[in-house]
Length: 492
Ligand code: PHE
Image: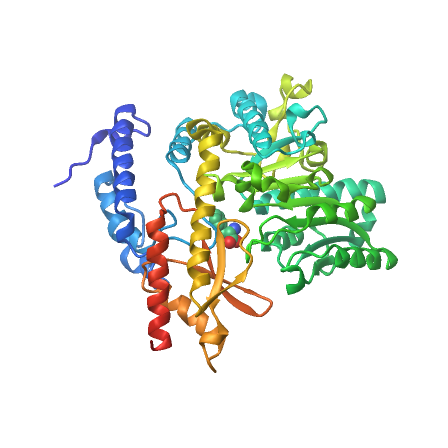
């Protein structure tokens, strides 16, 4: 019989916090130890939880022991285990010990650093770690606080927010120049491989959706944005009286991790004063390694750059790092100054007030976790983690390539491999349909989890490596699972 500790009626009793905190750490440590025993992709049906949980909240307190039991019994079946070493779906959302304890620290302190005075360390640490990270990625000085050109970085939640903020910054800058009445003439550019968060940002920003030019990509450029097509589209728009505003280039697209030719694209946009945002949500993590930094060539001519440290830099959701060359474009568009937030540091313009660099007023102290990650592992180890993922991806690529029933369908740039069962192995079977069924068959067995993409009419299976517990043996096992399912379906 579990007894209810009376101190649980106190909201923040230090001893009870200690007890539950230790219990939670043990619970998670056990979870990581046993994570492989759960099906990677949840196998529940929609609505499963409503059937087993009560209709209303409990009137009386319940003990943590019981709640944790329910987590295991009721919640776990409905989890897709993103930290499982057998998770190869979407892009990774990487945890680490430093990332988790960093989250814990910031949750415990629970400060709200919207302005400098609201918690000076929250702002100052954020500016410092953003410069550290910018230097690690060899970003041009113009993006750094310490660069002396007015640039700087901010940590936001996700790429959707970063894109929306930068579009709105560019929009305001442009409308001030050309007059507000011209908002309907503003045009934005991206490729058909650009992430959907860009479309969402365009929708919210008040730019007409008809003025969103989605430039088709083709196999000839491996589905990268072709500078000639961009240039042609811009020229046409100008002839028709439109005003080119914004372009989103991608380093490592979601479907196949293609890299847009940033240098060439920026040479074009430069002449028209177009704001260029560089989205490296996943692949940005790799750019802490010198051998990947060439992908950012040309960024000196862009305006903003973002990547998700929660994707491939071990910093737990959420941690989208955004740098801008001209933060005043952001603050002009986003700042507010209600009387109740007025303070001397702000009035005398001595400080950064990050509320003016983002959508919401409130903000989490995310810099702490990034600081913990950077310090706990050091640049050297962080690079090695990335490199080990890339090596494992090369190994997987090799396994696929030597099996003639399979083929690689997009060049591997980072730690993601796109492959399928090749038409040659399928006779008169429909190739897309076969691969779709193969993927579903694998995902519903629960041993490993992968997702798909459809590019240029080709249905492909994506194998994305970087979950923090993945080792070579998991790659080999995954390949075995894939082969077994394919064999069964090919009647071998
Ligand atoms: N943004 C990813 C996608 O579109 C999904 C994702 C979110 C992956 C967060 C990792 C972390 O595929």
